[in-house]
Image (cartoon, rainbow, N blue to C red; front, side, top):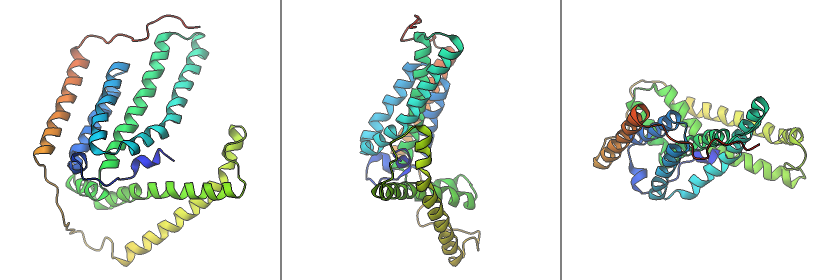
Length: 263
């Protein structure tokens, strides 16, 4: 459930919180593009390190660390499955294969953490305004924002159901892999039923407020880029340009772990 916590907005009065959501989304896209563009540990490590000052400036290190903790299981699964597949098909494990697996794992962590910084520091209301500025139809806009709002609620509800089932003697952490999956059935059924019930209540609330009765919508606030937004915007674009130029014309990055045979 820690991975779902990365979608929970944390209120703050920092520079990162006050940034225009369009600028923060562009920064996230830059991190995403660079992590996909490179398959080496050095640039991925640098992108990961660049995010740390942003997290510290936003004062959301604990929330950001929860997203890393939640992604650690999937990251470990990616590393293990790559190593097993390499050994199965090649019959040997070399240092360059280990580095390749570490690169894929680090790429996943960078992708998760970059998007977690965006969602943790961006208010759903401001994100909705940004989507309206991008001419996204309001129906899709509303559905997306509602999903973001309810994912952390579902995570809290799932944790409550798990605690209640544990108090009734359900052991979620014992047994083999298949047994553990079966143990989660008493968790999923109440969660699905409550989700359907909540969706019906939301539909009735929207209908009572005449949702979609008019296409002319007004907002109390409007988005505009200030000087700080322009500084971060220029920095993000500069980082993207440097990464693209180095990727096309720069020297090939060396393997940090070497190419020797392990076993």
